[in-house]
View 1 (cartoon, helix red, strand yellow):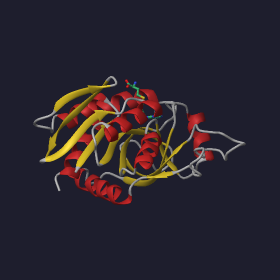
View 2 (spheres, rainbow, N blue to C red):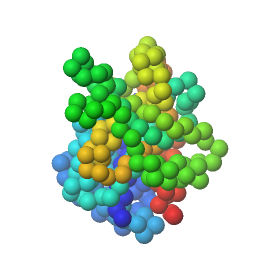
View 3 (tube, protein in one colour):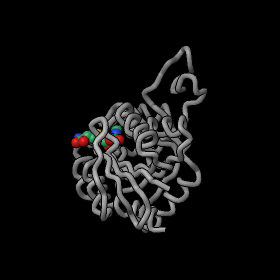
View 4 (cartoon, rainbow, N blue to C red):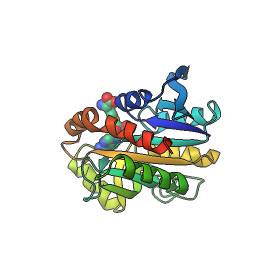
Length: 231
Ligand code: SAH
């Protein structure tokens, strides 16, 4: 069983790499993949790179070139639903591309030829990940549900409000998850994702985001990955 650990930010990847005693680097398509072990289990750690296309390429390489059996994403996201506050954790049950719109030919958000706008994460792996979050970060508020992805850093209250009105069940917004979920569905590879809420996707998002990465997100990633693979 080979597990891919995909991180969104350098700080998060660094904290995961610090847990691998033996990794070696393989560079493909400008991406550095770190092949190694964690608690004796085979892992490949890599940066997703930012945005849906970049993340889809990374996921495809993990599956086709590195032959991973499952993909786990750890990253940060902007909180959308009112209850989803900075420092909370969101475990994704499903992803949707909030900036995809082929209407009127297809319903808004529907991915053409898939007949759906939502891609579910793997239920079993998501359950394991949620349990790992609970062990790694006791006392942290954890939400589970829909996460939306798009090629925009949402950093104004006006945009965040529009997203919440359009997609009231969306817990958080980020830039990669829906792309990886779609690739994993194509290849039949289990996918699970956890995002720590770094900002509220409002007017303060940019400043909140930077300080949060340094202070919290990298610690969360390492602790969650450690708890997931220690079993
Ligand atoms: N300045 C950063 C850019 C990060 S873009 C850098 O130096 O790399 C923001 C990243 O965090 C994306 O990978 C996205 O998935 C996530 N994210 C966090 N808050 C977000 C928000 N409010 N809107 C969209 N993506 C967000």
